[in-house]
Figure (cartoon, rainbow, N blue to C red):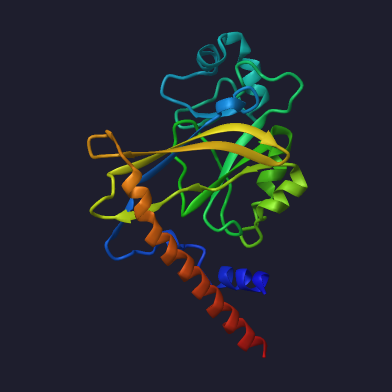
Length: 257
């Protein structure tokens, strides 16, 4: 019964519309930025950076890895990268400055919104995650990167997290909020969520997530009232999900009969 309700819920809700996008009277959707850092996994994770004007691989190697001579290490982890042909805006993967010996490096991706519809996107340093409702971070072994990306080529048949884990041994995090609605009278001007990677246990990527509520001047303000104000929204959201699931299930049942 529960599995049928969940399936009906996915059928009844458009992939482009999720509860976090539904306007609630008296509430406002707060601008939200989610930034990810390698944290305690800095020796295992590659870092994706966006090339700036004036960058070249020697300069990047010197600034990021401590020596221009480590250019070959950058080339080795980037498919088809030509040292003489990088341009502003290109995304380049950088290996750890002090890599963990004998351990396969990891490439970080994220997915937002309903899992069965969403694409996997690279986590780029300094670039906020974008999307709907919630996101999960995927730590993909470098050797499995091509296979991982190939799993998402079919837009109508994208894998669920458990399928990715079983097929490729990818570690996946818990969900991170991507959009929050709060009472207009109490809502901050902006919310920053800083996510730091902690460790991998089995196929679970453990993270530390800290929210900062900011006013219009960029100053941190007390978020206790805002957190308490989320309770009505959570109740409305759960009621809406249950109602949508029941309607979808009844619709499918009537079609079958």
